[in-house]
Image (tube, rainbow, N blue to C red):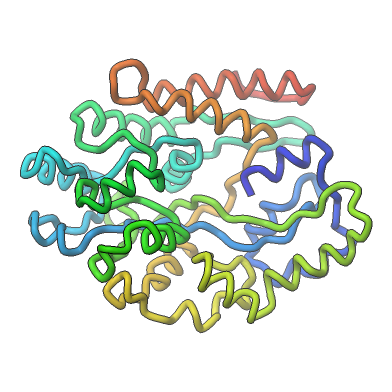
Length: 337
């Protein structure tokens, strides 16, 4: 979803509205908005990326950590663990645009919006800054590790029990089982920590669609295939089993694969957690038309966060300024500074 507006703005995608509009009712409503811009449809939704907490159940027990229900409890757990074992970390800090966006999304942030033909850019809004300041606090105390999630370095730390939990999307379960196989049966999944005790709000990281490229010789047939891939029960079953998706098609939400226990996660049915997360995700998030630039600028800004040369909070202001400039350079009307 995140790159679709970029491709659309570059006139690289075929408007498939005339073929796809009849399928709109087959998908979770907000996912259809993710593939639509200004009344045109550029893709068929495949999945969403509801987020949760992946954690080593055995190590939480070993260190006397309660599964955090709030971000304050998460910070307290991080301090307790690192005090008990200075070589161990509760988690990693957000290191790219999409990790940070999922955390900001949970807190009600909106990085982009549109009003008529004008783009709104609010990457450094108050909700995002609250999230960034929280992670800056953990980094300044060296309570989380400053390395990318789902990277070879963090997989090494997960294998050696130096990082014992991660905030991640549903597809992270497949990455864990593939890259940290020796800890099978020791993991569990819990809801994301909350900013307000008793709340139930999740973030979203990822989600994909199948688009038709501009110039496709058979756009109607391409759209039909894309629709089949996202809605056919056999296809969706394979996607869940092999890639760990959470379906965007409403029919896929009752797929039997979502009711099966996972041996890697101690026979927990982890999709119960993600199903709840998916139904408690803000549905009005919108991506912008220069996400390749946003991703690159965030990667540059965040990789040095925590070592004194940059901060997560500062990265928001940096990327805000660069994004407004990038949109204007493309000749787009934009508000924000």
